[in-house]
Image (cartoon, rainbow, N blue to C red; front, side, top):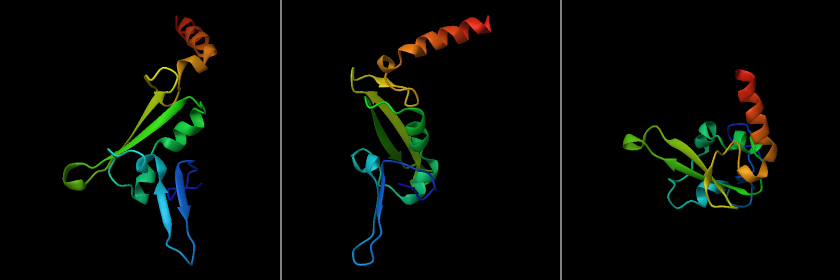
Length: 115
């Protein structure tokens, strides 16, 4: 679904119905009790749409935390990725290392090319 910032995000949900209350939410922020409440303007700073484009691994779980700065100003959107296979934190743009057997070969080739 398209976010208020204009990007596609599978974790954003909105329902605008003329007969019922309008609903707009980020389900990643809603599922994290440690996160501040979500506001539509948080979508402009959110890296999740880019992460979803870069990493389609079904074994990676994203955890989004919105943190308010000093006096509630300068809100930060932080995303953490956890591999469901081994429970370790991983790079959100790459995902679980077990899902990318060719990635190590690619990295070795890139390092060899730098020499």
